[in-house]
Image (cartoon, rainbow, N blue to C red; front, side, top):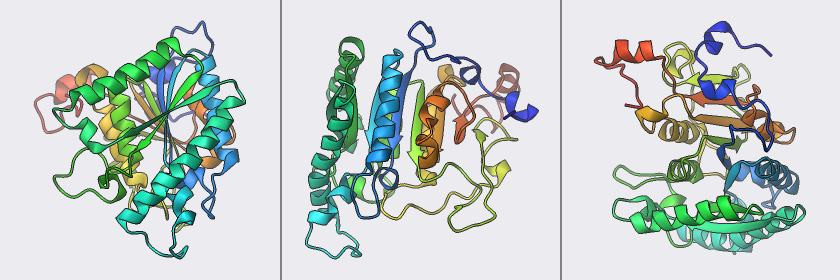
Length: 325
């Protein structure tokens, strides 16, 4: 597949490098893999082992190639819902979601543990809350950062699996209101973790990659392969993207993934054009989509924030100044 010239011209250096994933590659990356509830569970609430194992297999392949890998995984609430005395079709209260998450987290981590054990790997569980990312909570963030760095540098057979602490904090179980802190789902957590560890890329597995509208309800929805937040040509508005709508059981949707991309990509002038967010579908995951994304192959939807130096200089004093500034 060849990219149209106007897309190729705006692709940042990250996309043109890292073509071979080997241990001798100097372009080794720190990568956050994020997977949503609807992607990792079946309709009956059970963990989809085919999907989880595909995720783990590719995470291990990245680690074996020398990359640093963290998995941010949803799915606990749905996996534990069956233990509650509520009808399958009932909408859960916040306290019920919290209890379901506490039950389901055990199931989720057991599945990860077993999948990683097939490769001789171990899972490290980490649960985060909004408060951990608020001002003044520097020690908590430092502790997490230190633990992850230790795993990266000294524990090549450990892969961290992070999730929200839904039992202790209810904020992550509902939509954010104005003034609420940090994040309301694992998309937001993935962006914050990515910034915390200085990641090069976030690769998110979702029901679908980005379309002009939800393809499940709009037959004429058009796939968007590339979004550059710094471009008037390949930005969201120019491509007519409608991001409303959420998955049935997840707390996020494409809108939260776009927010995740902006939070992670627009994290400072020095990082402009140096980071990647990639959203791929479950079907693409099952055919090696994560590994394809890491080596720059066109799969799913690629997000970046990149402007040439000439563009930055020309627009510096205008309302269109680089969002990374």
